[in-house]
Image 1 (cartoon, one colour):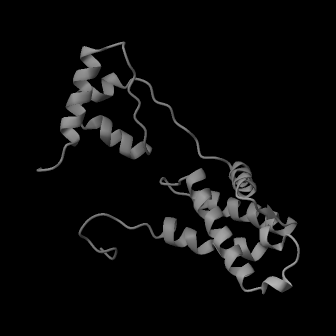
Image 2 (image 1 turned 90 degrees about the vertical axis):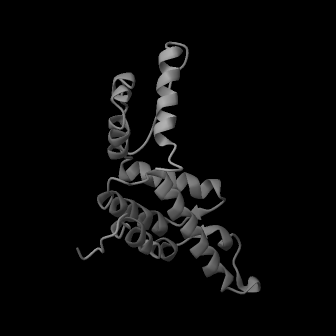
Length: 167
């Protein structure tokens, strides 16, 4: 296939690994299914990548802690009720995860969406009517409104190919 340099890259890596054995390390990373396909692309690959590290998904509690830290790093504070909403949301995200679950990357997208929702909500309040620090507080509604991300991003993943989803 013209313009497909994948096989050429694999051959180059294999040659370097053989010629310079013991002088450097090669790490490859990806989702398990993709890595299996990659290692099967050439008979020499699987024998040269003899160690496999599998990183388990974060727990719902860890996802919540990651999100909370991201909010703090962005200068925001969760209300008590928003913290409870976040906890429920992370449990839901965890239960509905699939093999492409992005862990902290998914959490980051959600945090940025919550902040955007919060900013839109605050922009509707006239500046003269805003209470002190109100501009930096996340409320439950800011979090509840991100449930569409899961539907769009995970549940309805697009497929690659020529068949319609009906077939």
